[in-house]
Image (cartoon, rainbow, N blue to C red):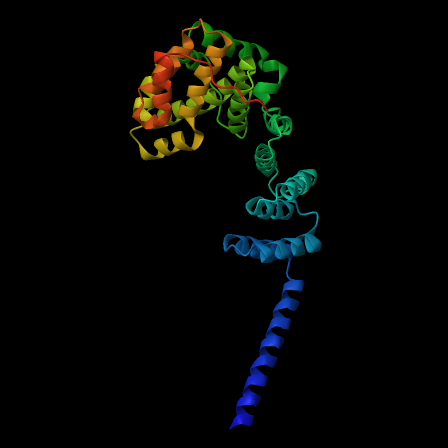
Length: 303
């Protein structure tokens, strides 16, 4: 009986080794994309060591593989190894020509900017975000120079409502980078550049909301930001969009940037008042109300 039990145990062990070897051999022969997907599954399960092993296997079999390089960076980022995460995202960006979806390059720059923010490297953070906004043709191209000048002039002289009557632009890959750069310049006291980027971000979001309303009701005519927000706050999908884009935060800081650039302007107060009236704005409504009552400059960060 004892001998049979030992024989059975030995057989089980041998089978386990053989199955493990067969699995490993299969893994060695699987396509790079399969290894990459297995790595993503391991990452979602919190099996970070296995995830890195699979991503490296994908790179060995299908390199250059920027998606897998970036995925290793995500593992390092989660584990707090910021220097290694920086290296991986930089490597993925250098290989961007091999991306299956070319637009994913912007996600790589955003992740690298996040690493630089965590590393408290403001110059590198700014440069990473500028790599994104410099691809925004309305921000970059000479043919839009008069439009850009119109943004600055109209918002100062006639306000945000009039600006949206005259100018629109689509929400796109650069909106978040404009918003982040705007806050960065605000915190460092560069108010003119803060206004520039926060305006771009706000126009993109508000223009998208106007387009959504026009699709729902072709007779809709934009009259004011406040009236537009009254409409879009009533529906779940547009409320979610407001939250995803951080519009109220964006508008609050736009008011702060305009006030810092020229405290005599009334535009900043009007924008703060708009935010302060929105229950959906949460803490940004409270902060805006405080600014309306007693305007002050945002605290600067000394890096």
